[in-house]
Image (cartoon, chains in turn red, blue):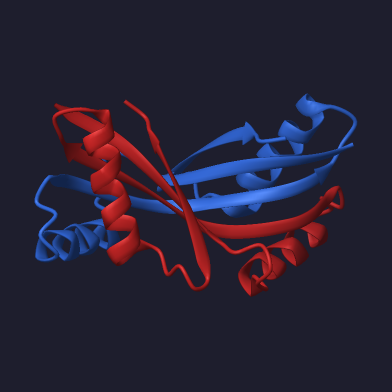
Length: 82
Length: 82
């Protein structure tokens, strides 16, 4: 079966996120003062051919660990979309 | 109140995603042949000070429309995390 799996890769909480800080400044300049913090990461969706959901999740985890996320600076979470 | 709002910005379905194609090749080289397609977008989390969830969502929508997403090439979806 074909599964759509989403992987969210975000910078670790304790690390600075200069891109997020820049966007925060931009939002304030646009008048959106209610925004207090911004963090920017990646969202990757995979089409995975797998026997069942847990196998699809395992494949996505391998992809995230080996290629998509740098676990020194980022953490990831995986969810099955369909 | 303080809300955490996530914005997912993904390339439109009908557009090529060269970054995704490159990652797909990388995953195949790593032996992950079960992955058939990859699309790469951004995930942005905002800390928003708002009276209620719907106001927080509205602010995030304004941020996405004005700055974070290029709606010619990308679509976005917003969800309240907490």
